[in-house]
Image 1 (spheres, protein in one colour):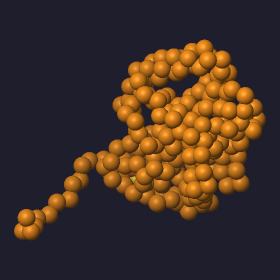
Image 2 (spheres, rainbow, N blue to C red; image 1 turned 90 degrees about the vertical axis):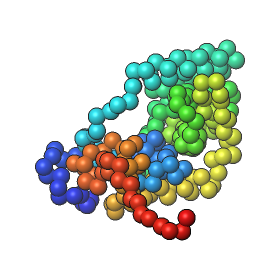
Image 3 (tube, rainbow, N blue to C red; image 1 turned 45 degrees about the vertical axis):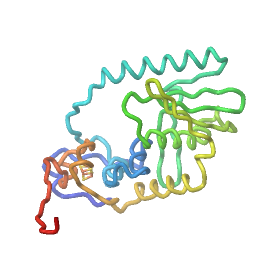
Image 4 (cartoon, rainbow, N blue to C red; image 1 turned 30 degrees about the vertical axis):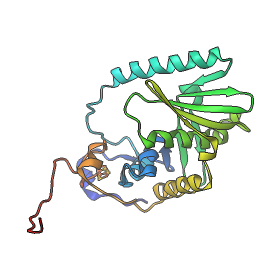
Amino acid sequence: MLYYPSTLCRWALPVERSSPYIWVTWLTKLLVGENSCEWGAWFRAHFQNYDVTPGTFDSTGWQLKHTNLLNRIRAQLEAQGKTVFTENQNKFVLRGQSATLGGKPDLIAISGSAGTVFDVKTGAPSPSHHVQVMVYMYAAPRALGQYRGVTFDGKVVYEGQEVPIPSLAVDDAFVRNLVELIGRLAGPTPARKAPSLMECGFCNLTTANCPERVADAVVQDGETGDF
Ligand code: SF4
């Protein structure tokens, strides 16, 4: 039985999953240190049907740009004679002993025993985008039978820019970090919580599930005569 704050009885209780489930995008900012609050991902790994904050993100505009860019990449790769699989064709579930990892690479192009994982981004470049592709490079040949034996490199595609990721980037150190993080999120002990304006501003959990959520700017200040 997992620890869970008793204050939740005032709201509809989230439903505990039968076993931990982790979506790739919950890992990427934690892996590169853009986010240090592991508790949110731990909570999502163990519970489902939880309340989320109302979104302000323009998902229709994002979807239009993303699809447009993805279609252009697919057409270029097919013109080069590559076999291309997109989005739901690449959806995977990789079952481990402690957790299940799920993800959906935007596009995979295959040519013989070489493959490339593409992920298309519409915003500013970020290291977490590269790590997302690296997790796909790790998981795709293990989870999807048609890619067994395929060596993958990767590419993050932005409007007007492509960032290549060599297959060697997914080395032992990367896999060790990934496995350790999954272990912390899959375990019964709640992971580290690090509430701050920055962390909570990008987190969709509500105070019903995370009472420590920081909603307003609280800037601590002091005075010094040193300067
Ligand atoms: S609301 Fe803030 S403290 Fe709570 S899980 Fe999300 S980021 Fe962490």
